[in-house]
Length: 53
Image (cartoon, rainbow, N blue to C red; front, side, top):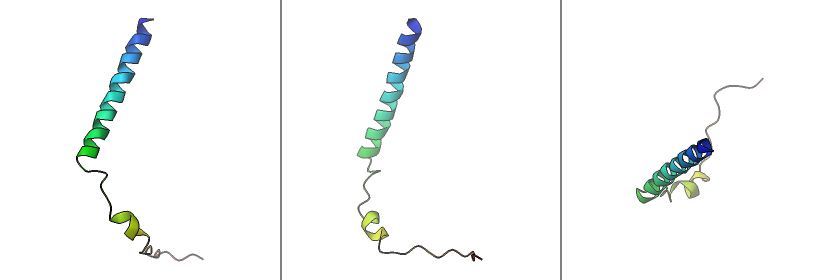
């Protein structure tokens, strides 16, 4: 029974670390990219240099 408590505490602490990292990323502007998505569709991909036979 004590193993379940230890695993529960460990999983909650790992989830808290990931939540803190996500909130830090949001506050520091990691997800603020308003330019790329609309302009990405305007440019074609470069053709591949390999020839298919």
